[in-house]
Image (spheres, helix red, strand yellow):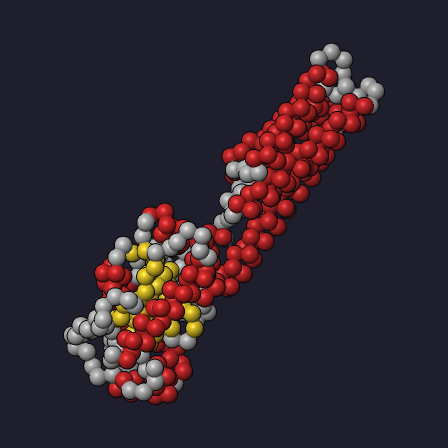
Length: 390
């Protein structure tokens, strides 16, 4: 969970912000398996294409070149098999794999009688694709330099002078590097679009808080952490008091301003690990871990005071009724179903707080009476927002 402290950023888990920098190598486990399989398939395809030279008479030089050629292909095949079996790969391993491909090309070209015919620089294309799609900017720059060096080394014996060598090396390495850079930039563009889409789908547009979908997405992680740490999951349901009357008295524009102000106050008051979400209308939910009901009650009281103080200096005053419910996560239960059962209990406790006078906290299954509200220094009469409505 992430600790944003303004509604514009939203107080939700940092997955959304991380998505903008996420690569296929740092994503979910499913993504990592897919990356490993893709790398294994590309490496196996390269080995298969390189093996064609073993069937072409005169393609390989005499002496130790054939065993070296076969050995490099064998190592590539073993690496591909390892990726397919492990089904995961890290960024450092992928950088090593790309550099292995660059070096392997030089060795394979050295073993051929005529690199222009049997080992053209185009053989680096698959390695370039892997680098462009899976590496970061710095590692990609190293690979692009390695491509230039590899082309120069491989083609050096095919031309009589340096001047004659420059043009084919520049053309081959330049084409490969331009394609590599183009795919890399396309990938970054796609990642930014996906991050923006994720941001829109998981954020409430008015308050900038997490939305209902984001709350659901966070529940499996919260339940896992609670089981691991031996803590309870606490759900706090907050409903702004008399919000309908405030809208009627001041207009919906002021109502939106009230929601944004209350959201900002709550985002600045919740603990960084907690999830703060707007689930609809003037109702907000806080999901977090606590050790006992007293800790949950203290958090709820802090949030209640934060809402009560957010209207200072404004022509309106807003308060919130808060219901609290706690649960011990059980092994094997569906976190999403358990989340909504817990929220339903907190929602019922919130309505009990309203029935007992509003602007207070009620703990489900805990105290027989809601926690009495503390007096606020310098508090004004609620005016039009104090009567009617929820």
